[in-house]
Image (cartoon, rainbow over all chains, first blue to last red):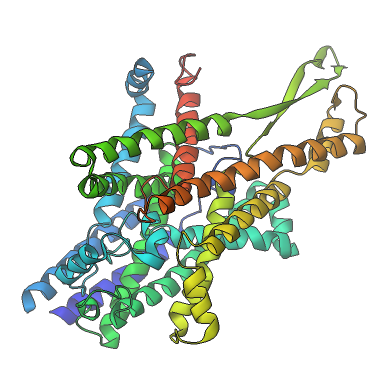
Length: 78
Length: 438
């Protein structure tokens, strides 16, 4: 049970990292973060990007569920 | 002021953006309270209570992560890896020609640099996550706590790997949340997340002050701190908004039948052009020696002793002096890399602009450099002093160093707040002229 959840958690974590890194990075570094640069909002994301968003959200939710699940299992195992 | 708020919520697209941002923030705070599987939550809580919210070495970073670090939650690392990655890339831009070329390329180059930042964030997250889990396992995260080495009961390699990977995924998730805010919400996502983390620590610390206070059952200290904090905020806002306006006159030109230019504008040179970046740079740099000691393990050798007596305490004179000097240095450094007088002068020349009384071209660049240098002096001193004053005051009055209104947190809060309000305002002005700030 614990091993299963752990492996699922690893898989979802790796997937999540991969998916997030596949996104196009928004916002350019420090100067953007704390004043300085001008904001250029390039609106509109492509269809691929929107699908990527959707998949990322789903994987994120599954990852979250795994975290909570594993935490509960470990807690009640003792 | 209040009507402007109401109007912000009545504008449909702005309302959507605000609600989206708030939603993401709720998710962010929720994740900051869920412990990583494998952590004994009861023991952690007991240790935090014993440490009295004073994390010592980790105090600063704990503040940046909104208290999530010491609780070992899935968002424990917060946005620290991303900030570190941005700092590293920012510094490397000066050193490595390829990065400099990318930066000059404009939009496409910046996107590429952002992509590098993201990869570096992942690497740093793995590194810091491993470090955090290792220190927690060995019990050095809470030195004084007696159950400190039972925070993580199971220390098998597999369990450790799962924890590190979970933490890394959490950090990457935060990065994505920040980007979502930048993309579809209001303001810059990363800085808003940082703002939230710092602000989240305020109520607890204020309440702790009330609990430990003596005047009028603690209410005296409570309101005293709030009033002092508000005064500092007012001062910071005042200086942040201050700028010198260098007048620029544009020559009138006829192209075909239409006339261009002929207007007079100004180049705004802010007193504090660099914002809070020098403070963040300085505090992250000063954190590194202590981190090295933590990892090297032997705390008895000479240099390790010296570092842990001089550089880990926020109120030690050596630390304060170094902090101040680093802030001043980085203020100049950052202004130098973010504002290039020659480029501005060249651009002005190209479009037929000039500063009255000064010839176009090189003299203009020299003049701009001269003004910039002189205006950065008070700016950098102000930054250093603001970052120091609360620390010194607290050291005098025997408070803990994790005072909620520390200079760094106030600078960040005000900087981010002003920026975000400005952005909301510019959105509002598309429909209505009266905004928040007049």
